Image 1 (cartoon, rainbow, N blue to C red):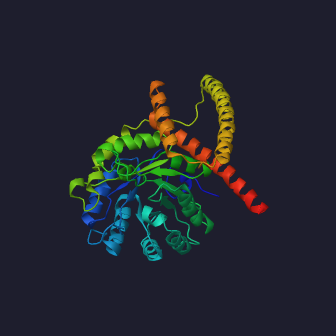
Image 2: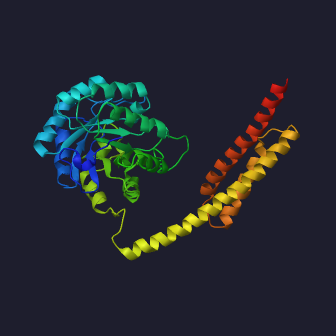
Image 3: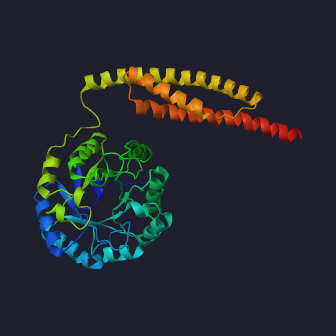
Length: 368
């Protein structure tokens, strides 16, 4: 995939992070201009955001001002010089946004889940050179996220970025949406040229956590932040709890600790290389132990087959998880980390034992 750097986007400079700020929803022309002029005072803000069409979970809630809000964005652009961006969810939105000189479009999480909707928007943008940012789907589905980005790239768009806004979960945590940082990291590994922008507002759900999420995004080397900003957050018509004031936004951005991916210090690089060699050696030993473990698993599978016992034994699985987590605690290892590892190991063990059983059944069937 050919993907352009953020610095090639119109009027975007290379300073990090790229900051996108503005209200969750456009509410009035006065509100938009007041917020825009205040965020403009922070020279790190380059793009003003506002939702014009708001896909809400339930009807009879504020679903955005619609078409009337697009001229407000134009006015923000004219008065402040900021680039402007809004969410589009269908081809009609695309047409209207382009007619009103919107600089950047973004695709919302609810749209990303639908390949048909994404393709409709991509087709509407064929031949148009405009940056498009794609939010992750609601559920933790890396393939679906990548697929949406690929659909835009296939029609010729190269100014693309991903927006990490977290993932819905039934699990109760301090976050509105679970960050699951491993997924955007894996996205970056698969598409190394793709800029990734964090949406801390939707991850946090409350303004008190936004600074923490912003710093984490910088720690994993994301290129930008999209922070919902309102002059009177508590009175916002949508997502009031997760919006910050322009003054608080300045504090958050100014207090970020930015780190480089590489160091020019040769001693640092030499030390890092030696430590990585140690990691490589340990990893080889871990893989050798996993191979030995799998040999034992296959023997267990053969024994179960000979005695007509099912590969999956829930009681044994629960016992293994409990014992491994207890051992992890004694060894000062994070229990959830160890639980996740052994869940993967156990799943593969059951798969291998099931394969032994299926191969045996196929051979007997052929004999008959």
